[in-house]
Each structure stands twice: as C-alpha cells, then as structure tokens.
Image 1: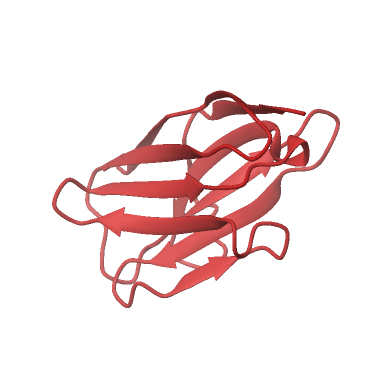
Image 2: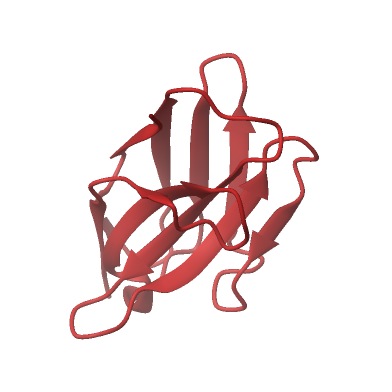
Length: 118
C-alpha cells in the first residue's frame, strides 16, 4: 500500500522560493509516476508537475513551467517540488500524488498549504 506524506509548505512573499517534499512509503515500480496537484480556494484541483520513476521524464503545467522543478531522490524515496519566483496565484493546498498512468491520481497525500503574499 503506497502512502504519501507531504511537508515544506508555508507563507512566503512573491518572488521567493519554497521546496515541497513528499515521502513515499510502500512498494512502487519503475513504471510508477509521481506528481503534484494543487487546489486554490474556490477552484478545481489542477495538475502541477509529474515525474516518471524509471525514465525520470518530467511534465509541467504551462502556469509553472520554467519556475517549478520536480525531482526524485531514489536513496530516500522522496519526491521534491522546487518552487521559484512564486506568485500570489500559486497560493493553494499542494498535494503529492502517485499512480500508474499520467497524470497520476491513484494515491493522494494529505496536502500542504502554500501561501504567497504580494
């Protein structure tokens, strides 16, 4: 049973950076895909980024491309989301996700709040 636990959210000012982390427990395979979604108040959940475990191929939404970087650390089975040049519109609850198809939505973490002030 795969479980996901996020950390690293917080309050920052526009232009600053944050790094989110997701600890992955349970067995996953090389075909597994890890990702991040977010949900802002009053809005639908939206895809942010994803990475394939085997090939390390990455995917990004247009709204974060060039500012966010997803990566995976195999040694401690964690997935990171480096968020640079944050904007107020990035304010949301961020969820770590995992799955066998793209975008990954089979498993969800509990979420971590990111707030960006202007």
